[in-house]
Image (cartoon, rainbow, N blue to C red; front, side, top):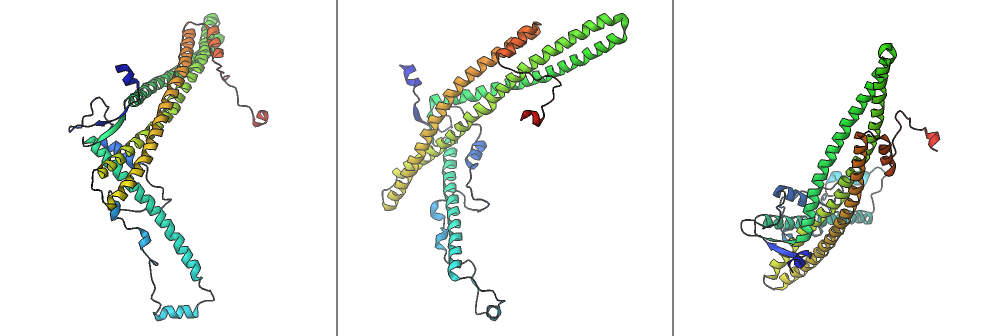
Length: 363
């Protein structure tokens, strides 16, 4: 019965005690990193910068720009110099008042729209920051999907280990490439000495042929190892990274969901007057939208984790078999098996010294 309960993706609110302990839940990387994640997605203002000295304030303290009437600068037309300029002119007709009014209204509309974007972003960031600090200091609760959180943590640990394997495989490729180049140079030296030393021609010739054979087999093994490295790199830095990007979006949506849930709970416990009811309706609407976003991203993460696990098993089964067969055949000196291994996995080697075909040949 216990296994049946744990297999369900149970979503619950985990209260945090006064000491900030969340029990078996893993701690976040750090409050500063979490705050940077909250602040990273700012409003898109297209080169418009608005500096606010009261970050984190309530909406009541914001004065909408629609209350400001008239142009920002007014000229005193009673000044004699201005009257003279209007009277003399230079043959240019002043713009029509209706066109000026239309331009002012358009500019004012753009400014109001951008101000509303900054206002919404500021309120959302304030609520999320407040929720994050409350969770960290043990004064709030967070929504946790135990099964999904376990899978996410397992994915991050798997990615770290695969990155280590990728780093070691690249180091092996680098060192083995140096070995192959050294064998190639040594074979050339033996071949040259076999021609200049008649008394040791046979011995130098045998060693030259051995080094050339080892060099050829080494180049074949390098092709297999390079294919292995390329496949692991795609799995780690593209497939896993894409899933982790969705996980980050899910975690941000979870924080927003809990922030607006807490705000709704606080308003629900307050007095029920006319203004409070209006704010309660707005809070309910915001909470519902963030809840839908959270549930959608949670489902997306679950699907991507499932597909990632299936793809990882399929890719690694092929790559590990390739790596084992190629390395075993090389160190056993079985050139035929080594070539057969590359053909089995459809790996084509570039011929050493082959030039790239011209653009005429490619047409």
